[in-house]
Length: 497
Image 1 (cartoon, helix red, strand yellow):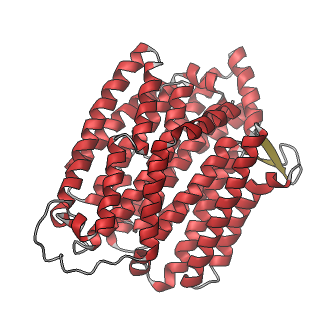
Image 2: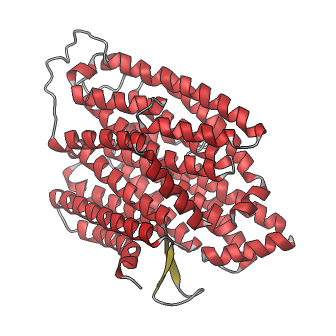
Image 3: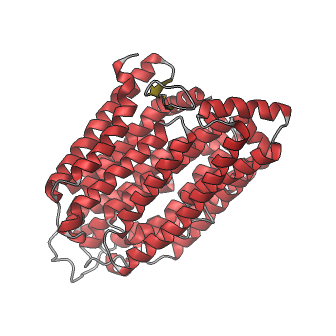
């Protein structure tokens, strides 16, 4: 075994160990250690990605060298390494961009606690990406939930307490359904390793044995993860959670947490149940329908908002709808478009949340649109960055969002006619709605007006400026150099199969 194959295990262990180390450090040193740790894991993930692209096939890593059912396995392929690298980049930039506000909004005594939660969150995301064991995935789903809840409520005001309680209630409902689905699968197959379950499920689907329990298990798992990733109509917790948490927390929650659950669902579809069995179960038709509804209803809710942070949050409901719509198409092209949109949305939504903070800072800390008038002139960098993110969300060529919508359009044209027309109609309507609320905001921040905020000093730390510039570059790279990324995604999905 090549030494580089240990990277997934080392990455998860390092982030868990860092949580312990951070608990003994002051806020200042916790911040530095956290940035160093994420950078190291990101570099290791990049090395693993290069290794797997050169190797041309995935591999499994048996922890403790014990076979099932006593041992546990990690699996690494191109898609897993790509996701791990991307998640590290987004998390590092989100924390860097919102760091100055973290120090203002969080009590000094709790700042190291914030980084403990971030470490646990990263470890859970990496485990969801790499694990080849279904129960281990559930354990880290719960760690992810607790960490995310802590990131929401660490500001400790009435809004964040309410948002955290809503998040916890809905998330526990999703976790319960997921656990029920796993229990049914274990009862039917006697296995927890993903590859072993898939072999048993394949035999069950051929013989027709346990057909109803299998369909129920698929439904429970899909609905449970849909709730946790805020698919419409299970999104009621999302606006307050994103709208009232710190800027870094909002960026991480919207970009990474929900995407970790979506990636787990994709893994389960391919690695646990088998894609053909998923198609035969007809569950993806329901995901397709909810995805279309989310695309429209999320955008309509965003239009009605008068708060920039909540508007961006409701936009996430629409974008998650895009992802589930692509999964619901039931084709390799549709899944490719969904995975690419996971990357595109993560890069763009973090950019929007971090840029929005810069606009509110020069508007008396107000998130109301009326107070944001002319904010693009008062903080030019934040205005440009928000405009780039908005253009990407609308789907203007040259930015990542355009590639996503192009891939979705191409995928639906290659699909059966009864899904092609609804998809094209909803893509068109959603794009128009995106343009309405994002361009309305851009026009608002660039409307010249004499304001009492004009003489306010603009706080531009090196970290904030660097994060925004890197987010803008990342967005443009995803929009202009999409071919190799799409190729990696398709290679990774074929390795899943």
